[in-house]
Structure formats: C-alpha cells, structure tokens
Length: 303
Ligand code: FDA
Image (tube, rainbow, N blue to C red; front, side):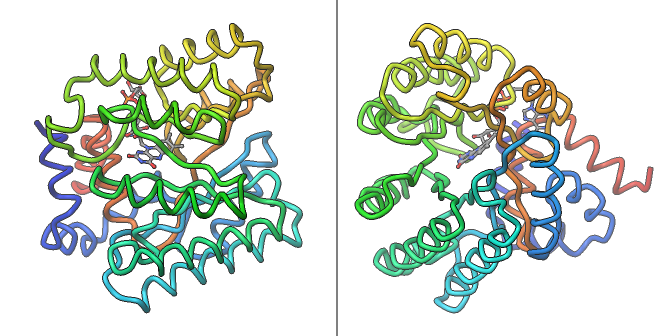
C-alpha cells in the first residue's frame, strides 16, 4: 500500500517539488546517490573498484521532454567515460543508460543515435553499456534499440524485469547475450505484471533458469539472499565458473553483503547513480522498503 503510494509519487511533479526542495532530504539521498558531479562518480568508482567490486554508473535522469536535456544527458555519459579512460577504469566500470533520459519519449531515432554515441565512448575506454528497463510501455522500443545497437556493439546488455509476464520469453530471445535480471521497480497493472512478492520471486527463478542455461552472460541483480543462493546453484549446475555470471546490487544497499560476496570470490557489480535529477530513483528506493521510509522520516525530524 505504502509502496504503491510512493510509486505514484515518483511520477508526481507536485511531490517532486515538495521533496526535492526540503533541505534535510539531502542527507538521506546521499545514502543512495554517489554525488552530483562527474568527479563524484569517478571518486565512488575508484573507491569501489579499489575494494574488489565492479561498478555500473547511472547518470540520473529519466523521461526527458526536450531535445536539449536529451543531448545534455548524452554528453554527461561521454564526459564520464572520457574521465574514466586515463585512469584505466573502463574494464571494471560500465554505464547504465535509461533510454528515456536520452530522448526515447521524443523520438526513437534520436534515442538510438544518443545511445550509439554512448556505446562508442564506452568502447573507446574498454567499457560497456547496459540499457536499464523502465515501465512496461517502453519495453518493445527499448528491445528494438538494443537489437540495432547490438549490430555494431554486441557487448551491449539490457535489464529485464521478472515481474512482467512477457519476460520469460524475452529471456529466451536474449539468453545468448548480457542480460541483467531484476524484479522490477515500477507500478505496473495486473494485466501485464505479477503483483505479489511470491509470484515475482517465482518468475525470477524461472527467468534465471533460462538465462543460466543459455550461452550469454547473466547479471543477477537482487539483494535477495534466497535468489542469490538459487542463482549460484543454477550457475554451478550449468558449469559456469565464477566468471560466467555476476551478482549486482545498488549503491548504499547491503554494502556489507556486497563486500562479503566479493571477498568469497563472486563477481559483484554495484549500480552507482550520480547527478542532480535523483527524485524518481530515490522514491523508488523508498517504495521498496518500509525501513527506508522510516530512515527518511527520522532525517526530516532532524534525528
Ligand atoms: P526485494 O525488494 O524483495 O528485497 C530483498 C531483500 O533485499 C529485502 O528483504 C531487504 O533485505 C533487501 N533490500 C531490498 N531493497 C532494499 C532497499 N531499497 N533498501 C534496503 N534493503 C533492501 N529495476 C527496474 O525496473 N529496471 C532496471 O533497469 C533496474 N536496474 C537495477 C539494477 C541493479 C543493479 C539492481 C540491484 C536493481 C535494479 N532495479 C531495476 C531494481 C529492481 O527491480 C528492484 O526494485 C530492487 O532491486 C529491489 O528488489 P530485490 O531484488 O532486491 O528484492
């Protein structure tokens, strides 16, 4: 109930203005977001890669409604990748791109062109791109952009959301490539997505089975211990070594677990968001867990 309300707020301009303008919010945002500038993302990358983790960096922003903002987001990614290149961080640091941030809602061809520029900059620094997945209305368009990008950049990955009914079939189509499997973070209707946690978890396992049996590179993105254990078992069953798949978690969430998994020899990648347009991302993180809302409310009360 609270989760649904928060997910509705994640798209409300009124709630955005109220929350973004409230000074104590910043303390809580800093737990989930690495900072606002390119240098902040680079600093977080150096710190995390220095402790044995890999990263995927997200320049925050989504649903841009004008060409200038889409160009701005593209330039931010290119500048970030150029900053990583002399430091030799490309191979341990990839980028995650929301197509809606580079113009998907305005013009499909523009979003493709911007994504292509980011893929080219990533390749120049020995890095890769993974396309994030947004609400269900964008999935076909995102997969179409992916297909075209992969003609020149076959290393490009994509996130698929286990809560969508269609995803098991999408996993079959993409089981030969880099796929990040997530549960799904948007408010979706019962006509297209599982609604209960147990149904989503079961769907996640079905998708994992498909990806682990395939020839691609599964990226298991979850903080859920049970699903991580199942992924490890399935990887083992399919003869995948520790370098045949990876685990992924979000910046600021279960950092101890991230370090422990890496210490034990797993490949672990942290999703590092940065930038000033943090509202939608932040509210989705609150919606995932009541404890995060309590943390937020305590900060608002100055405690
Ligand atoms: P679940 O929410 O069931 O949590 C399992 C356990 O993890 C909880 O019991 C708790 O212990 C811990 N936990 C989970 N969330 C927490 C939080 N916010 N704070 C503290 N503890 C928490 N979604 C999407 O729709 N499109 C995308 O492209 C992506 N990309 C993406 C990349 C990466 C690397 C990750 C890890 C996640 C995404 N997501 C995403 C988000 C994803 O869909 C999902 O909303 C979150 O990962 C939370 O789901 P879990 O699988 O962690 O399980």
